[in-house]
Image (cartoon, rainbow, N blue to C red; front, top):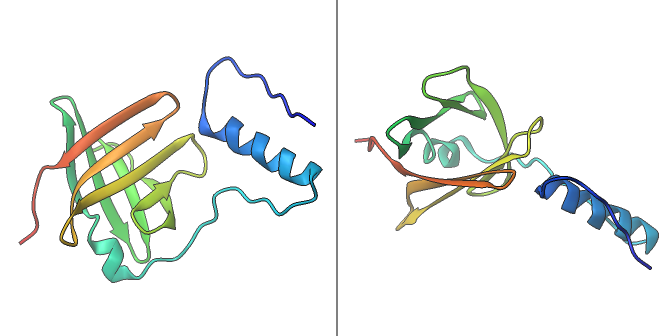
Length: 126
């Protein structure tokens, strides 16, 4: 049995869709990214500005229990956790992976379609 989905560019959404269809055909459980709630204390670790390049800066902010990202001080867009250090946009093929050492987040990797951007924390909190 095969599942073939055609698209003019690769993205994770089409891959996830193919895996879900294949799981349904095999009568196995399937799921797309599921939103999870992280404690506010955990969300606080991600807040800051990240420098991707001189013309592309990302700000991660929080309102209540929800994170938002904005590019170059643009309009904030809500992002959702699927696990600790991993967030996604429900409307776009866009995800964020945060990393660091010793419990300190110091970088973000932004995946959008075929594009992968990495940004280092620009401002450290005191």
